[in-house]
Image 1 (cartoon, rainbow, N blue to C red):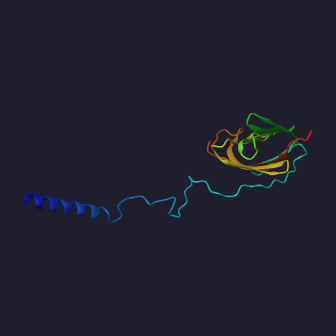
Image 2: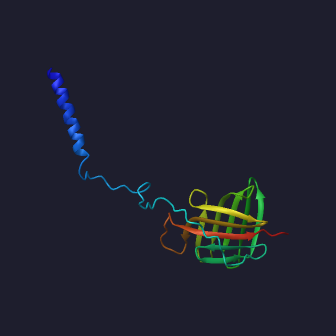
Image 3: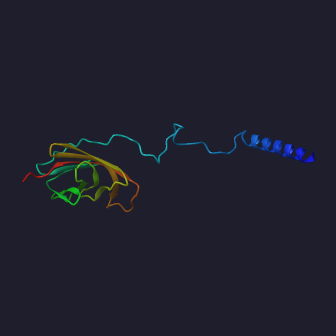
Length: 172
C-alpha cells in the first residue's frame, strides 16, 4: 500500500511541476519567421526582378544593367560547346559580360556582368537566381547574383545585386 501512495504522490508532484512550467512568462523567446507573420531576413523575398533596360543592344551585341547602371556591349560571340551554349563580349570601355546556359538555351548555368569601374555581379546557381527569355534569336536574362565592388576596401560576401543582360548573337 505504501508503494501505491508513493507512486500517486510522485505522479501528482510531476503533474504539478509540469503545470507550473507552462504558466507565466516562462522566458521563452518570441517566435519569428514562418507562421508568425513576422519578417525573417534569412528568407529571400520573391520580388520581381527588373527586366527593363533603357540602353539599346547594338546589332550583334548586348546591353547590360547592373543595379541602376547600364552599358552597351558592342561585340559578343556565341558558341555551343559540350553541353552548354555560351555568349561573351566586351566593349572598348572595359565592361564585360559572360553567359552560360544549358544546351537547349532554357536554363542559365552562370552569368557575369563586369563594369569598367570594377563593380561586378556573378551568378553561379548556388546564390541568387537567373531566368532567360527568348524572342526569336534575341534573349533577355534577368537575375540576381553575388555583388562585388573591386574598388571598395571591404566586401560583403552575402551582398546580392540585380542584373539584366539583353542581346543577340551575330548572324554572320
